[in-house]
Image (cartoon, rainbow, N blue to C red; front, top):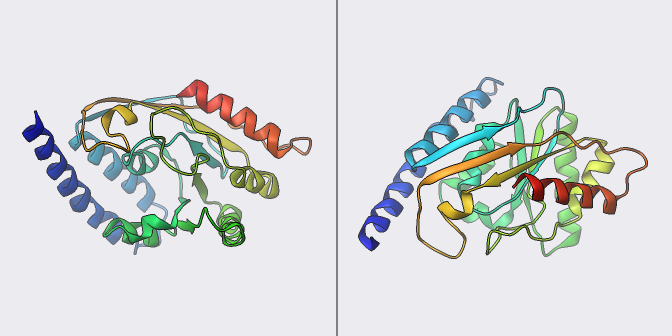
Length: 226
């Protein structure tokens, strides 16, 4: 079993690198149709990694939305483009920009780095994210800040909810189930199987909403979906 798992890890690394290259090349083409192609690439990667992706619910029309979901595995980076309809960008920890190849994808798709330890620069990152929302880009944001160690939903950071109220954009809650079982943060083991993605209904940022109430509503929704 140990040998099989190492083979899976090597294969996963190969697939990741192989399919990262066309995504990087596509990013040089400034056309909206690169996003559906990126979606196909994401689904193909998941399939090759032994993941049976099941999507429940429909990605809503309109937007743009601030897309929030629970974060439990590295494969979330491929699940996100697989489910989003339309052009998108996102916010991720600045440490991810140090990962070879993956960092090129982040830069080419205008993903915004955020330093979770520096409030001043984090605010600047969220202001940059708001500019993309104004241009009609969906924005992927992980409200937990980092991957869960045990699969349970961690407390949410407030930054994304400040952004929602400031930009007056709705939050699209999404729950992911099965990604933690495939590959958790604290293990090298890969366990192919089914991953279920549940797309919820948009949560509007109304004038009467507070950061705390919007955060609590979103937390309960994603907890239920996942």
